[in-house]
Length: 102
Image (spheres, helix red, strand yellow):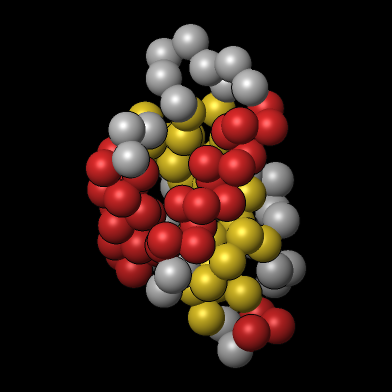
């Protein structure tokens, strides 16, 4: 299984681990406190600065080359930071949102 592959049910649907869901919910709460929109889209968060702004996607995956620890990653599969540090993720997300603009 590749580093970004996720478990699948028999019907081919992706399964998100309860721990990943918990970590994404924790990150979403922090983002909401900073007045960002964080919508749960199946196995990832879609984060924006508001209704008319562009968004970034953040997933929570196990990183095989780091002992299978949980990491946040950009939707495209680029590692963001360890999931036990949501403050760092929030800072990077806010910076990315400034770069993509509205």
